[in-house]
Length: 241
Ligand code: 1GP
Image (tube, rainbow, N blue to C red):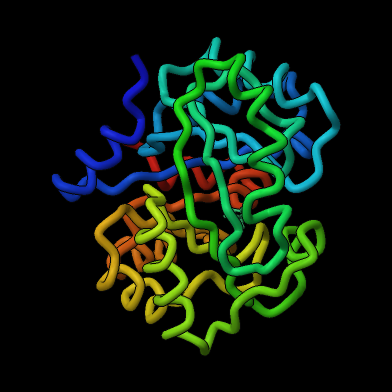
């Protein structure tokens, strides 16, 4: 039985901070899996996310199967599209882009995914996904055709997160976008956390331990980092258990 969400709740209640490494199948050579996951296994990383805005069909499935061979950490899909759903993973972030007003990414893709999801045992994690402006256009913005919320519009971000919670979502994800120049600000994280009962995920543009700790201190329960590991694997050395 999968219990990814229950374990996240347990961590939040015991104030254990969570860290997910994001692997983008579009950029990650599958032959590097063992070497990369060996480093993940001796770090403070608690979850492996796999996904990207644009990934060739079939590639995710092969990569996830390889990752599962190398780690006991939960592997969770963070899909940009329905084609990235694979039963090799443990769970799926069922993301609804609640900062945007594109019906495809609010509910359309979800309906499309059901015939595929029915054939899997994935634990589905309903997640309110909020894209926050971070200085330049992000892949999520481009692919979804939506605008991020202005980073100064803190009340709007808080209200969007709360609306997601009241709609029954189990997680809220504040996203600055992969490779963002600046991560989601401490002020935004604090304001959202204060209002939420459900766990808060923060990602995008976090490149060092200081930024990671700042996100945690502001109230992030889980942080997601992709680019910093892609660009320099020595970052793992700062995050040893
Ligand atoms: C992107 O939040 C994730 O969806 C991670 O972002 O690649 O900037 O770490 P980075």
